Length: 291
Picture (cartoon, rainbow, N blue to C red):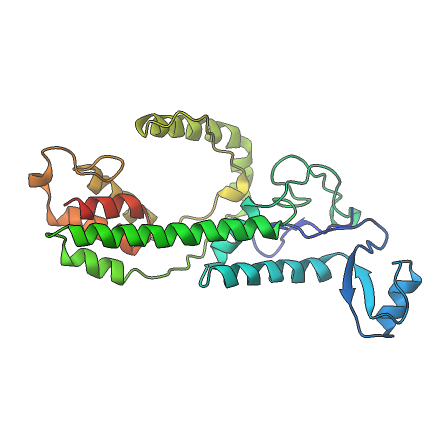
């Protein structure tokens, strides 16, 4: 009940925290052991309030932002070590998706006393960061990237007529960092009122896609207002490129029977553009390799 949480008054729609570190109890939340200068004022003061350390032992117990922030900074550093070049937004996504959901307790009364509940909430964000799970997830991503690239190189070596443009597209694929625009509070309020309807419609679409992919698992999308961001530059173009490919290819990117003669420069351009934008890469790659 010592956690800080709030909706930013400066950045519209920004909710804090994304994930949380370990949090103790009021009034002092003396919970996480951290090193301090031996015999310092902090060393003595924390001992006097009962953190079970000695006044000159170089240790004191803390909680709150001052200790949660370095915990998460350390987690990010570890992920960067295991997967060099991991984009900041992907790092945040991994920490969110591997966090331990906190369903009980509340945030500090000074920051609203928001109740924790199942799923993402304002009190604890996506939950307690679990670095071991985050590292495993980052390693899976790294293996997938290496595996996908190795398969692509192998397929290209087997294709005598592989387009030289495909090679250039793969070699020049940039590592992009896309910054999302936050939505204003008025838009968020409207979305909150209709979020259940939006989720139902999305799950209908998801069900159709799963049937086409012959996936029988029961899967659903769970969304909340944090999933809605301002449209990124180029989103409409990406959708257009994908539709162009689907004129001659199936959902997997495989060219439909009898359609190779229908291929045009615009289909190749659409696939290469998706690859360069790092969008729908599997579909674009399968399409170009199967030409």
